[in-house]
Amino acid sequence: MPRGFTLLELLITVAVLSALLATAAPSFKNVFETNKMQRLANELHGFVIEGKSEAVLRRERLWAHIIMSGSSSSDGNWRIDLTDNGAEGAGTVLFSLSGKPYYGIVVTPSYASDQISFDDVHGRPSSGNLKFHPVGESSKALKLISHTLSARVRVCSDNSGTEYYGYSTCS
Image 1 (cartoon, rainbow, N blue to C red):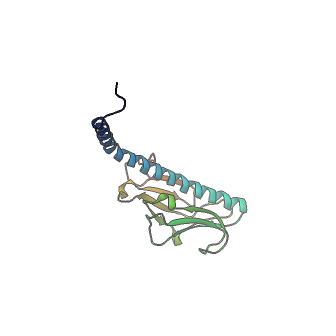
Image 2: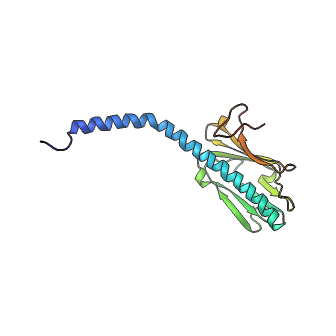
Image 3: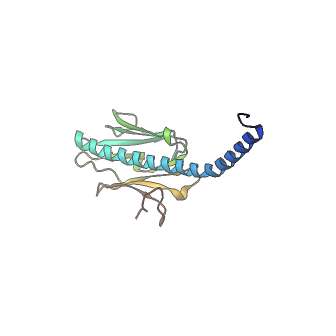
């Protein structure tokens, strides 16, 4: 009674597994993309909420500086530093969020001076938004939006009428 597999049996098995992998790979890409976008949305939202809380706790004005080389970045070479000084690079960095884990996501800030300020009494963030989407898929963008008067911070889908990554549309 012979033991083991023949070369033909192994080749057929490898061919079948390769075909299965080729059909499953695109859906894995979508899963990773969705996971990365949801993680970034949660990190950004948490960072701004933490900035609000820290400003109230310290009873001082704080600034979150959005630091990147251009007006947007997709290479993960960006960061957000929460400091106690309005000038970038000055003051004490209290918290920092790195963009390195989010390579392949385009991040575009729309805040005055690329910074979010938090008032010292209520922690209200300055109004503006931070838009982000996978490279080449700007229709699947999410936005982190903050409002000064209501002190509201939320993440929503920037595409009117379509929800993406589990976030409702911006209204």
